Length: 110
Image (cartoon, rainbow, N blue to C red; front, side, top):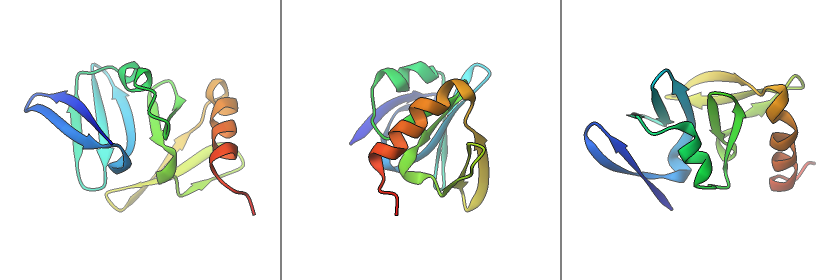
């Protein structure tokens, strides 16, 4: 499945599974993928409104692809890897319940 994202270069087709995270930074939104970052003026909420199951908001400015999470520690800090560099993102209290429920429903705990 792909999403269409308006950028200053035109409209780009982005495969959902290639998205690692989406972050709102000032007046732009950055979409991080393995070896590319796409910048758009589309709001963070436009991605949430699309109801793309694996994309979950974890704090006021960040959405992550739950299938790209490498680790979740006990304090609610998640680890993802962007361009082969680890990045930690804090899951804030207001998003933690929904996030953890989604994780529990999508993954098997052994």
